[in-house]
Length: 435
Ligand code: SDX
Image (cartoon, rainbow, N blue to C red):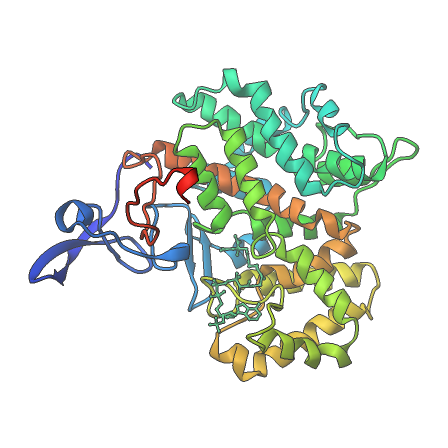
């Protein structure tokens, strides 16, 4: 983003203590207009207050648009449904990074650039051996991706567009290798090197599931399903982990450290950790007859249990990704000949019950992307502990596209929110012998 595209759209008047303040209103191309409060503190000595940023636009962005009421998700203007049906993850990476769908030559060049960066420095492997074998893959991903800074810190001048592009290619290319290594390390199996004659998702599946003792053949149906899962997770506007990456990047930190910060934030069960939590919840429910007990708990204000994979800060209608995920879930189970997956039965019955329940209807709680993804990923052969690492793998392109946009934004400055202070007013120090 080289210059603001916001369009003046009138003004809002704030009247306070018999003074009125005119606040400019700005319009984008889609979605709510914004009240520009940048001068409010200077003119009125007032902060705005918005814990959780539920009504705050933190930046101007061209990348992803979400309409929570209409259940719309666009990557650079293309709907998630069309991309999931017609595109592939590496093409979506190009779209998110460069803002348009590539022609054949551009796609070939991008594919070659990413492929050539899929190997990691051989010394990076030793970082894995510092972890216990039962370390959570997200702990490993946080540590190892952050450690990439040590390998590229001096060679990454974030003010140089070409070096930013190389860092982006490195991260998109190496994150599958690192995720596969995290899985291999947890199993005690040897790391498997990438092969340059395999596509992005095929390469990841082989690095994850191949063993040196025998040939590994990628199942094209599984690869297509996982590739679609990656597309669905690639970006999602200014969610918690993307905002973390932007905030970390606003200080000038190198992109590898910023992506490691995003991974840390994504790990939380309220965010990317929900796919792992949702599957564990379905396993805990176990059978359809136990659903009412869990629905009751989810509605009980005194019980902090929540239906994992349900609800969303923005989608107050169905998460369009959840529908596409359900389609992939059925495709994978059909391919595997699994027609009586008990967790799918529990998930579908739980969804049916919840969508008819007044509590969920009134609070506009629908299944989100994490509700069906766990069943799909488990059917693809991944352990539950790898689910959020797969989310991080896919979201890395979104994080890096948003980081690039933030760096190139002329309005960008270090992020530094203020607060409503409710602590002690000034006190005089009392010596110890008088307390
Ligand atoms: C992701 O932001 C993104 O875009 C995220 C994401 C992405 O792609 O980056 O889409 C990925 O993080 C999806 C969300 C995954 N998380 C879960 O599935 C965890 C379960 N969901 C909730 O924790 C919750 O719905 C959130 C965190 C997702 C959203 O919470 P909000 O918007 O802050 O809403 P809230 O917590 O204020 O809830 C509103 C009300 C509350 O009741 P009241 O206080 O009004 O009485 O709805 C209730 C909540 O108690 N509620 C739920 C619920 N989610 C919200 N009640 C039961 N079960 C739930 N899942």
